[in-house]
Image 1 (cartoon, helix red, strand yellow):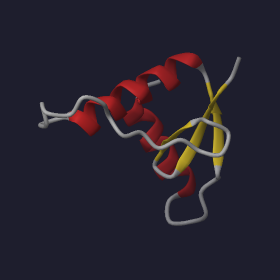
Image 2: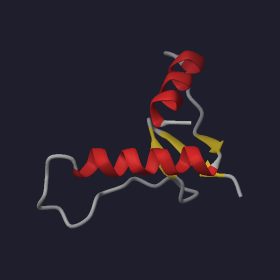
Image 3: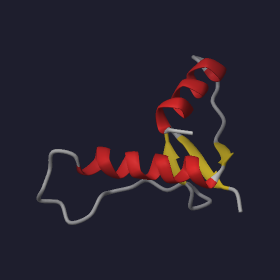
Image 4: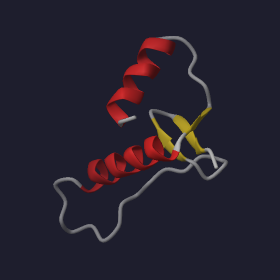
Length: 72
């Protein structure tokens, strides 16, 4: 699933309520979110040598303040 699809699911499911601290996702969703986070972080700034990415307590990437955990 794309990051936009995941964002829509989060918004529809949790809305203004309490969101989970982490969610388990498949490899395709995790990869799509990672790519979108990289693109967002470095977009418009060609001087950055690296992107600052937030990781959760389980070393999963943070997306919309939810830690995505890659299922293996």
